[in-house]
Amino acid sequence: MDLETQFALHFGALPEHVLRAPGRVNLIGEHTDYNDGFVLPMAIDREIRIAARRRADRRVRLIALDLGNRRAEFSLDAIAHDDAQKWSNYIRGVAQMLERRGIRLPGLDLAIHGTVPIGSGLSSSAALEVCAATTFQTFAGFEMSPVDLARVCQQAENEFVGMRSGIMDQFIAALARADHALLIDCRDLSYRNVPLPRGATIVVCDTMKRRGLVDSEYNTRRAECEDAARALGVAALRDASLEQFAHIEKDLPPRVARRARHIITENARVLQAVAAAEQNDLAAFGALMNASHESLKNDFEVSCAELDTMVEIARRQRGCLGARLTGAGFGGCTVNLVRDDAVDAFAANVAREYHAHTSIAPQIYICRAMNGASVVQ
Image (cartoon, rainbow, N blue to C red; front, side):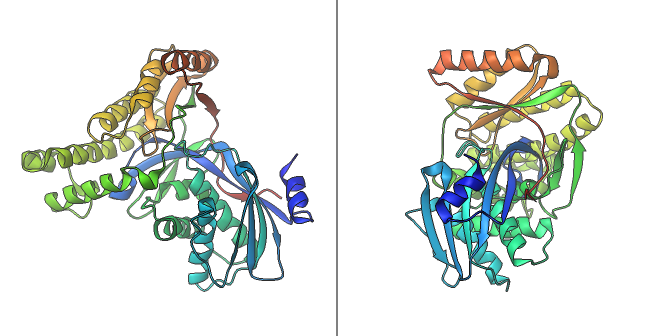
């Protein structure tokens, strides 16, 4: 049953619009975003869709079709956190941040369906936020640039949901361009499209190990990075060089030193990866991905047994040029650069070998780079 039909089934009329926003995979640049650094994500062909219809009042009624048709409802005049239906807080938060900007939103009936796996590190939350913001914009008719819309969504996640995320996920969901990755400078939000390397495909492997970021050590890592920046006398680790770090490393607590080393070297890897992509140097791009994983594993300590197993299996396969964890870590997915002629065998072999090692059947996604949020109809 398609989304429009399900909407009509639950709300008694067809939707006026269907909107979409994509999930994302970060090719390289992990945990650099909240350190004012560089990231290189791409939008993937998995997305959140919202079917919507205007209401005459100021109420928003929601149904999450992928969560067993769970329902939630709130008034735009009294937006409150919902501990029972936490998924709805992403939409509540976006609505509150828009209302705070003086934008009067109409009441809506919303049916939500997604193909971005929840908790996998492919940013289902940002896709939901950006899709919700695009929905409110479509019905309220206000002018807002995609950059500002991404900022609203980040603010919703930071202040309403309570997750201190950087801007990357919302930014790529709003601004992505098909067949390209997006280099984002997370300090000033300048960006440019980077053509993906030719001759290789991005393959995402989901370990099926789930984690909730709010309850993970994400916020701890962020605090450790802030400690390192203060010790280095810089506004953010983006401003520190390896030479500066070398002078002070022995004076830092070992854990803080490891965090700093990862961020400083990861920022450099992102810029090197952009150069490799623009020169279509697949080997160099893959090597940088491999180095990123080792840094995330050993210095930032956000990997886990499942992620390491998946990476090790991937690197043994013919045609695999690079493999690394993607997302915040502690579970979720790996991202792999695989030669086009090896993709099918890679996917089959990784799935079989990972299952043999863990007794877990992974999900493998052969990805295309898609456009950012849009109105479908």
